[in-house]
Length: 180
Figure 1 (cartoon, rainbow, N blue to C red):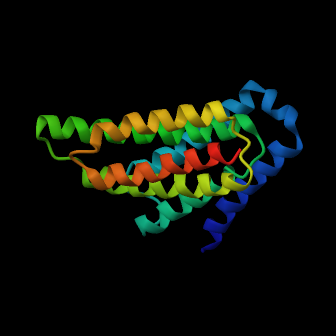
Figure 2: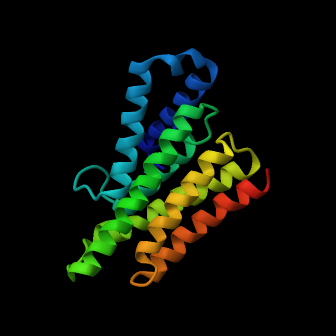
């Protein structure tokens, strides 16, 4: 990793330490709003293609995945819920877009389709982290799993590989729930 990539991962780690150490920060609306914006930006850049930044798009996506994984190590429930909701919302949007493209016979932007891979990787890594200790409630995981399953239904016939990839994430949610 380059120096700037290391700095970004370290910044994500430091944000975790800050939120875990000073839990009163989570009660500050302005601070949490900024954290929400940060997570949303990371997920947006993960899902949407950008023409600036690092020259290697794959490397940039890997960095964003690592940053999300680092943030997901936090003990801050509000932060974890933001990450989970942002990722699931992107999955829902991708599946809706794919379903709509199939219904209208329009081509899907290949970059968006390919970026679905990074959504899967990010979610799988986070769920695997949470297998040992998951601070997110069972109800929240069940809701997440339900949303994923509904999204999967939209693409299971037309895009079976996409459906299978997101089914794996849904299955990880189920495993975490069962192991409680």
